[in-house]
Length: 330
Length: 254
Image (cartoon, rainbow over all chains, first blue to last red):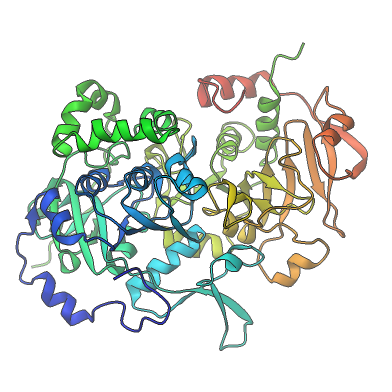
């Protein structure tokens, strides 16, 4: 099914169905990245690999490229390098987004080529502001028909995106802009740690991952570390995704590079800057994909190929949080 | 003769404009370096808020992106984006929004979306990101951009983030909570906005710059303040922080 279209009356399965499908009591959903993508991402799906600058799961994006998935509707606030690579590889037919840049560096050249010159093929755009995208995920996660926002007024965006509409406030406050829910077929979340059932904990920037996961039909959790359920239970405030909505769990250390995992490895700004040169021409970009995606079997080989010097450079110093006392109540 | 660049003067002027601000919403690029300079000079208690979900950041290095890990470590608060955008920004708690732009018109409307037609763009720009809501919801908006006829245009190809729309009362009729653009800080001088017509006028010049220099780089006939202020050049302290701490590689200040 393509992404949510207006007029689609049942864009998301009912809750009981979701719960029964995803397994209770807790069972291990650990699998390989190859199997998770093969089983849960299909041609034509809408896919959200979320994470605002932080925890962008490049490992999953690369596996989607390797498996040559086609006609995907890619959803993300900031398409970033990962969707630039997926668009260049020919995986996408449409982008739902709010900021199309290489932050602090410049353009996403592959996406620009698709939009401006239809290379390698045309790319449809559905564009919002950050708040508009966030509101679409909120509506999706909360099971609402639309969500009101005080942005868009005076902007040309509603003129070019007919899904941004206005309704009358039933309490007499005038008109207000609304956006429809976004229900990705698959949301992929990268986390610092998760247990085998998919209970995932994140610290640092949380972005819109929680909403993107709850809005989705299927959820893949990818984690730097797989931990015992007891570790999760010892710090429940840090849990952002419950196993309840998770279909597969993948252990993929360094899976977010050149994005980052707070406390694990730094954002590789050198790679983000270098991408500006690599991606200027379609041919050099395709050579890069040959070397770093198609030519490798998976993330473990990527990590090894990148080499220990890079990982040493990206290793942060320590800054531990203080501990809190949850109390024991017998 | 001058031992500083036009960009350095612009960043310093932008930082000084934050002297009385409490909370500033920081955009990417030049706003980012200006806000970080302000926190190290005129406004040590300035709370930096980033759309990535950080409130009260105290970054130890200049972040390349607005989602850098250095914004998190040592911040007052880190939260999901829905919370930040709704309870802080939409609720009206932010004094100043700081934005850059590819195109700007005389009423401070901004285009960061496309050059040319939206469906068949000559140049596809990044789009809004958070700029549209920042422009609408922050109490006042500061704009920082370099002067050129390609940037200061008669008519925008696309309105991404509204300033005063067609001027006069137009923005008030929108019913949004922020007052709109307060100043445009460029590499030659600073514009402010007329209280009635809402058209921008040249309010101050940097040392060595002339009205003619500015007019040459603006597509419409400029309005000019009766008494043009000349801005004090960057101090040694401001330049030292800019060059040694914030931008040692010189990516933004050249």
